Amino acid sequence: MMAPPVTELTDRARDIFRTVVDGYVANGMPMGSKTIAAASGLNLSPASIRGVMQELEELGLLASPHTSAGRIPTERGLRLFVDGMMQVTEPSIEERVAIESRAGAGGPVEEALAATTAALSGLSACAGLVMVPKRELTLRSIGFVALSPTQGMAVLVAEDGSVENRVVQLPMGMNASALVEAGNYMSATLAGLTLAEARARIDRELGEGRAALDAAARTLVERGIAVWSEDGTRRPVLIVRGQGRLIDTAVAADLDRVRDLLDDLEGKQEVASLLDSASAGDATRIFIGAENKLFALSGSSVIARPFRGPGGRVVGVVAVIGPTRLNYARVVPMVDFTAATLARLMG
Image 1 (cartoon, rainbow, N blue to C red):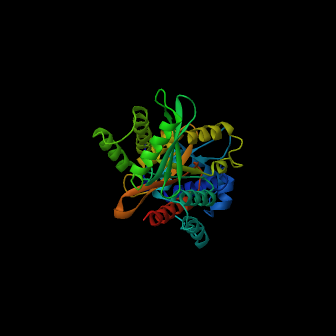
Image 2: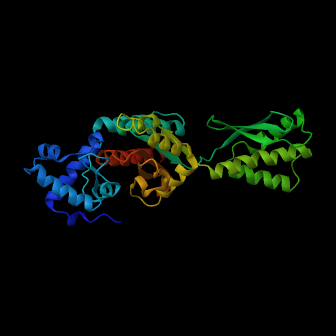
Image 3: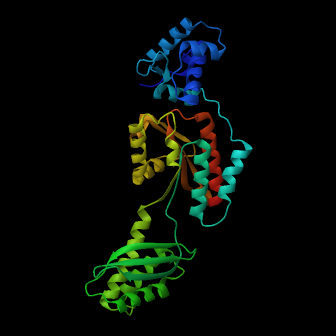
């Protein structure tokens, strides 16, 4: 059931509803009529406020948790607030500096992404995430190391100094000299190429019979480049920082919810799929509680924004994950600013 338009609420109902949301965001606690009467400045009696809160509850915008006399906003109510009533608060100068300094610290791109995500996590008191496509590495060298008679480790060194390892199956009867031969051939043939270019070069040379390799080394070369090409195309880089911030005093008593959320974050492929769905278009996407199946059990919210690189192409998504009671008015523009900062980093 959709939330009613804000325009269908009376001024009094909007004011009371906003007060309940503000109190819930601030401390996670239900708001009672006496508290609202004292805090809102509406000059209304607690009895009048209770009547309006009952109407808001009947509209599905407020709920009474357990036996409490107070109310909290429902997920439907939070959606109404975010879409029609929220007044955003732009990041402070100090917050902007904290995010930009992490992005501009230098070093490998993934380290800058991780540092920026950690800064966003700290400032928002949520878990921070960033997802970018697997980078197109330029190869420097490739080597092979035997792990057992049937398994080996392919070691790729990129031009930027990064090192990646993959386990490969060794051909039957593979000896140490064939491992060295395969590694030397690949390093000499593929240095300076991207993975896609390397795959094409290997396919061409082996197909034309120009590679002076024995059968075992030839098989290992094919397996070694294939495992990188296939893995690199299907796995994005997903960086998660600040999971511990999800366990705050307001939710510590609800350990099952926290456990569900942390389990969800372990399923990185599912999280990556969620962020990928937010990459379409330019707008910030906000998923509140059960609006997204992945975090329905944990009752969490996701705020995600894509960022673009050269040519205006989407190159990644930055997001935060936190309880539904997070401060949307403050966190949404913070995610927007982080996305703009990462776009400059990737430009």
